[in-house]
View 1: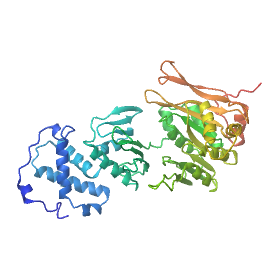
View 2: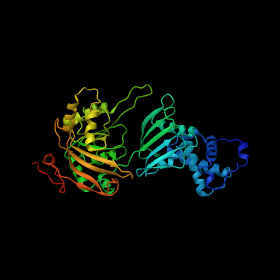
View 3: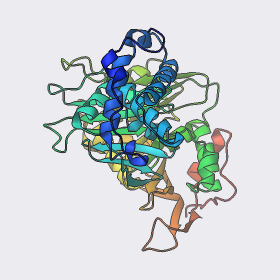
View 4: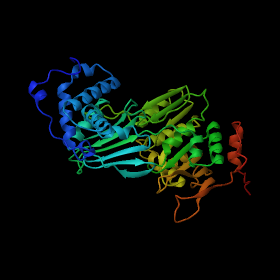
Length: 453
């Protein structure tokens, strides 16, 4: 780069500035022509070779300096706020992710949904909100998609119109994200992009402060994890299962060897001895995929003290149940289900999806013997995420599934289950008390023991 710029034509330097409307509209969503014009000028002026040798932060600083000079040179009369907005928007469009840049930097946003270039939604505090700004054209959106997927060496086009990838944390997305893209003709709205920003790793203390669960249940779960009980975190989509799984994993003792297995690595464990495994999708030729089930099988040969599976959603449930029943107690996983009872049934169904022919009654018995505690989460209509029940599995062998409620959420109003209410403590059976005692733990004082008659 010669100075800040490469050589530009004398004709354009001598040309008078094009008329631009004054005020916020000159750089707002209503005048995308201004953005496109300065983007073209910026890309024409800069030395791309020199920029490629800079890191992301240096590159952005250099471009903002160049852009500020261009705004002055072109004769725009803007306030400081409008000038800064224009510079930021043009640089975002030129080398960043355009209108996504401020959204990715917003800690209150958990998900970004793009329904074609003209429609943009975000999830903030559990509720959906439409963003007034959007992409100026489908071409701009496709260019942004290419920039996103190229960072993880993936490709999406007409021959490969869908992609699902994890984006590692970086300066643009400090939390990391999982991105899913569907292109036309599969998507009739135009390119559809869903970006799930990985949540901050909350501990149980923070979940207590948010009202996700009460102190008695938190203490019970801590003791269950330390006593090596197998815990299933159940709930619907976006109910906070991964956040709860991460919080529970913090209670695994420091000296144990932990292996985590996920589709997209979201868990952030604090322990030192953690092995992280992540699935791999098929390549363009449709080969090379490594599913969760293969990772679960291999983890059993890696001398794990604990196995933490991000989510059971297929045949890997069988391998997980077998691991729980054959010396790998204290395992943790999540499953999609609306109630604790449904979670047991779903695990049995998922286990039947494996390529191993096992009679359904035998799978039922494996679930009964493997699962100890089910933590059920629910996302309310107002976006709140809460533990609505904590149950201990009391059924054995071929008995019908039977649960003992240790805690449940009791809403103040049946018409508004997501509103105010209280946590109601149940009673434990001697079997749970004895299992905790054998591991040097005990039930919290607030949970009574109900002797069977």
